[in-house]
Length: 84
Image (cartoon, rainbow, N blue to C red; front, side, top):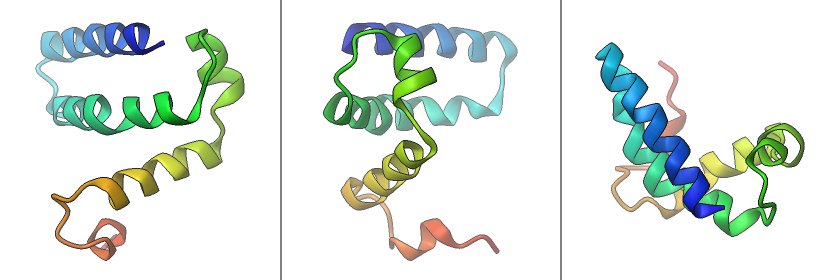
């Protein structure tokens, strides 16, 4: 599954680079935090099944919590939730 996720991320990166989109800032977050979260919490080998059946809204919330708790580069955990 890791290979397939990284391959999918690389394809996404190429599409973003073609469009010169500012959202490419998210590639490192997806690579360094989201993919490891998926690998640690989901065992399915089919990506379609992972994203359509296995991963729920709660899984996305838990991945954000994982990012905040594990990422030592964040200045503060509460800053991530500041919507102002």
